[in-house]
Length: 90
Image 1 (cartoon, rainbow, N blue to C red):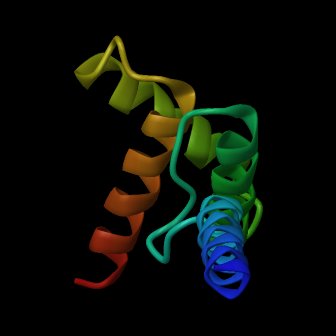
Image 2 (cartoon, rainbow, N blue to C red):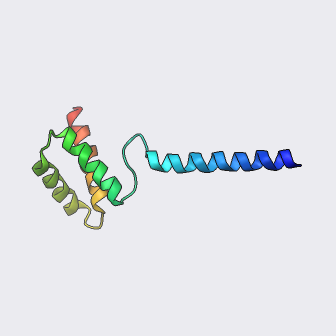
Image 3 (cartoon, rainbow, N blue to C red):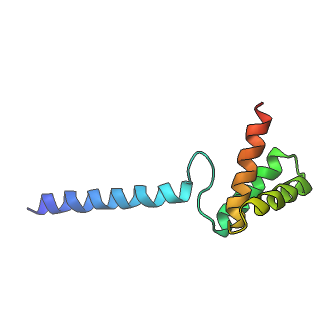
C-alpha cells in the first residue's frame, strides 16, 4: 500500500512538473497568451526578423489594429509576425 501511494505521488509530481514547464516553455509557433511576457518575446522576435526596424513593426501593429480593434497587443504582434513570415516565404 505504501509503495502504491509513493508511485501515485511521484506520478502526480511528474505530471505537475511537465504541466508547468510546458507553460513556461511556450509552443513552437511562438509565445502564446497575451501577457507582458508574450508581448515582449514577440517584439524581440519581430525586431530580430526586421533587423531592428521598430517603425515597420508599429506600422504593422497599426494596420492589424484597424482590422482587429479588440485584439490585445500581443495578439496583434503575433498577427504581424505571421504575416511577415508568410510574405517573406513568397
